[in-house]
Length: 364
Image 1 (cartoon, rainbow, N blue to C red):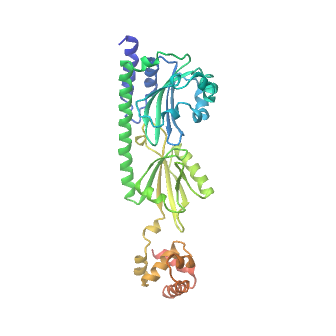
Image 2 (tube, rainbow, N blue to C red):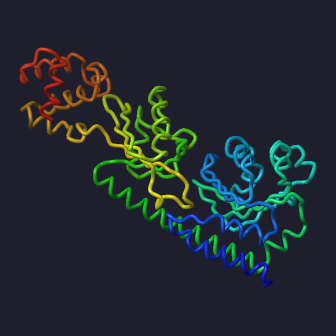
Image 3 (cartoon, helix red, strand yellow):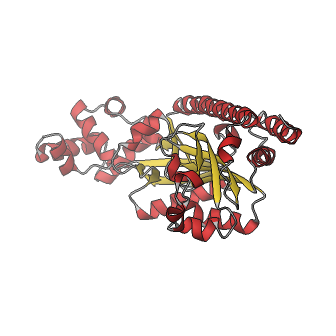
């Protein structure tokens, strides 16, 4: 190994060893090592979520204009990212080999971004490939070279990429362990957990959250993102996610759930232990209306000395069901339901149905 390779490799390996420390993200040394070992003009580390949203962009020697244009616009048309779909981590991709010059000339990303910013060849090492994240370390050259294949297959580069892949896999294991602890902790309090990007792309769903997603009227997943059917609620959710990503105190939001229920959301910027490369994420904790936790027909029967069938009717009313709908859903006569409500009013000393429900909630 030549001296010109030993120094950048040593620095890069030392930096890679610190990637398992969430508070330390020495990407500049990692990228500089890759740039020198491959022989490039610039280097980047780019991470996407499962739906193609940009999660992380680190660069070495990339000018500010190119970085801004990529982050704000061109990441959506990156020609390298689609090539990585389904390929295992550890794979190399080279635009000079994957595309003919004619094919490249037809790509807006090549003509309007790569050529403009002197990146006519991009060589990418797939560092992460999971269902929720895809990340690659890329080296860019203004003058394409046929010698890249030999360089990426050299002993120093293999040492570098093996160390990088091992470090990223360790971060994934550590993040998964931290998430399992978070899930278990909040399920103890009957709270569901989502790990999402600031744009709402869902990277992790706890078991309790997964069960709640199937309920009509509650939070749902649409194209891999958190979504609420109510337009105003969706707008508030998007705004709170962005606010939470900025740090500071947790944001609170109350959304409509299934009929008669509400879900309280607490949104906070995720601890770096839950990320795998320092990407900004948001933890969303979801709790049902606390009154619901204690709501069941048996408790109502005991509290008010009513019959089991009356207790079931009262529970349905408290959840927001209309008497006629309850009769249809339970295959009983509407007149029978009306008679049970009248009996409840008498036993609970109420003259109106709203008073009946209010008194029941007060006791629960």
